[in-house]
Amino acid sequence: MKIRYLLCFLVPTFVWGCTESPAPLSAPIFDDVSDVVEDVFVPPPTVDILLRVGHFSLSGHFIEKPNEVPVSSDGSWGYVQVAAKLDVPEAFDPDFLRVTFTSDRVEWLATDTLGNTYVFLDEQECLETGLMCNDIVPAASESGYFETGGPFDERLAIANVHCSPTALPYDLTVTAFVIDVSYPLAEIVSEQTYVTINCVQETQDE
Image (cartoon, rainbow, N blue to C red; front, top):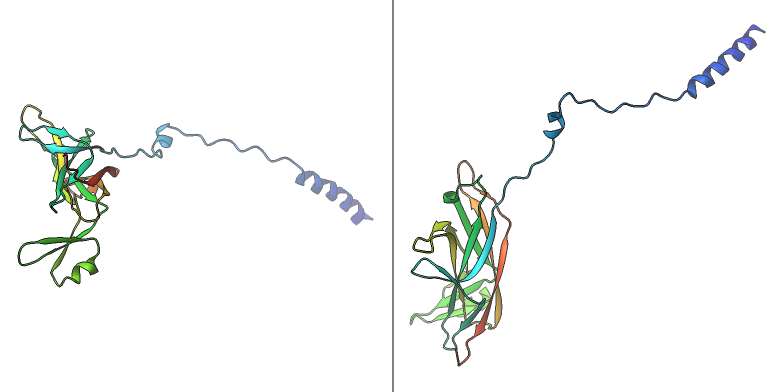
């Protein structure tokens, strides 16, 4: 009989203990706002690039031209220059910036004993001539960010670009990005920027 009374007492107590609502969780308390701010990611500064097509004059002025480069029908090449103008944040020293240029076209050059140069877009076709073949990428180069001097003094990086007569007409996409070579490690500090050059056959009235 005593056991039955004891169970009658324990069962209601157990049910009441399990159904009791837990205390709500309180939000974390920070002694200082800096505890939170320190975890916020701040992206590093980057250099912006503006590409222009044209040629660099002896007076120190870059003269812009249309992106279309005519190539003579006599087999000679057409030439143009691409200038990179940079927007440099104060975190960078312009003297330690380098602009790397490249393009999306690879050519294979073979030169015979008479000095004639033949351009191929496939290495195997070039090797079948029996001549030594060298690959070349139009615009591929690295330029410092130099002061042009003269009355139009500004800082520019310059790349020379050629259009060969092989497979005309075609588009040539030039890519540029900026590298900071200051101590201790060189690193890329810009996004890639592009400009398209149209290599076309020269017309008779040009």
